[in-house]
Amino acid sequence: MSDRPLLGMTVEEMEDAMRARGLATFRGRQLARWIYLRRAADFEEMTDLSKDLRARLSRDLTITDVRELGRWVGSGGAATKYLVGLGDGSAVESVLMRYDYGYSICLSTQVGCAFACPFCASGAEGLHRDLTAAEIIGQWYLAQRRLDERGERISRLVYMGSGEPLDNYENVLDSMRLFHSSGGPGIGYRRMTISTVGIVPGIRRLASEDIPITLAISLHAPNDYLRNRLVPANRTYPLAEVLAAAAEYARDSGRRLTFEYAMIKDVNDHPDLARELGILLADLPCHVNLIPFNAVEECPWEPSDRQAIDTFERLLSMAGIGVTVRRSLGSDIGGACGQLRRRFGED
Ligand code: SF4
Image (cartoon, rainbow, N blue to C red; front, side, top):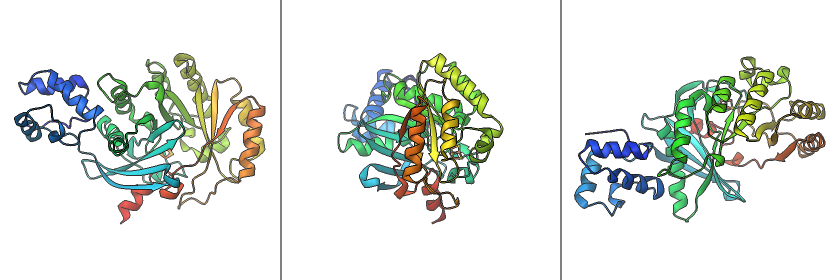
């Protein structure tokens, strides 16, 4: 008998899978503990199950069909990029980042992406398919297994890899619920961030769920004229609509919003744009992350210089907006989303 892999099932689904095989329900909880809390990769590791049961389960079931195809360490050890192979032969990337507060992992949600941002390698290929919740969780599992060797733990999840999370709403939400669930990996909603280009129906729907995650919006420009160029989704969901939906999310969730702003030299880093952004965001409970742009091969743009970033930061602060200049991790191991997978696919 075969079934879908166990990693990605809720505890209740594992219990059902055990019942369907005539086994005791508590075996499901045992499996969940081994997989989500101890990251077992083989039934043989599950030493509190009898030898016969381990043999039976390994005939019947698989733990996961995601696997590590490659791993690259960069940024002086602060970033590790994983190339994750999926059951159908495709691959996505995830990036583990080490910060002062601990480890955060940037998860992919789709193979490719439909939204074609000009600075992004994933968008250049178009959308191939959505990831399942199991494939999203599999990215965490592979990186966490490596950290287990050093007794360390991933404490934050950022849905910011290849793909637009709100374009794969159900699977992304299922993965979040499982990450948060009791018996699952035990990562709370407040430690999760969804980063979106501003899919208005998705933001509204998220506002109606009772899950207090952080909503991050890739803004990159303070007006429609410039944003249409940098974020093509803006032609479908213009800035005013995105900000209205974001305000609704902030009100309903009680969470402060995050706006991401990639600093691109001579494109969106002029001081006038900082002033315009300050006015635009003045009434929103928000924080702005300024991110030095990661250069992409196909794209002629360059990162802003330090002085332009400092000026932009100062002007936003003067406008009363909370602002941080984020470290750009991982630019030496494949930079922006999609680049590593692409190189792998070309080899
Ligand atoms: S930046 Fe995000 S939304 Fe834009 S093309 Fe890349 S993956 Fe898609």
